[in-house]
Image (tube, rainbow, N blue to C red; front, side):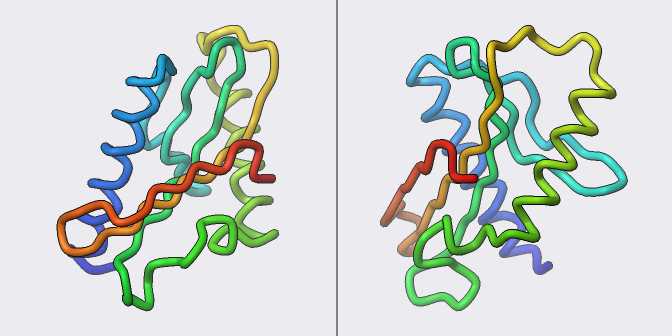
Length: 124
């Protein structure tokens, strides 16, 4: 992955985190890593623990998905579920939650400006 692509992804993750926190969500972990991969954000939406996958792209760029739901296929969703299970089992100090959910947030940039922001709750 190129430096430009990594910077774009990091900027999108910061934007998503900021918007979620502004809406009253509480960040639990950013970039939860394991040998199997990474979960971009883990947040609390009220009492629901939400595992958030952030997808970033540029208008007209081949790397940017038109819609974030299309960027997370069955294989990626299964991997995220596995990563979430691993995190839950390895984090006994995690916050209590009434339920769990997987959201996908897509951020599309036009230059440095956010052209589109799409948050799909319960994406899979």
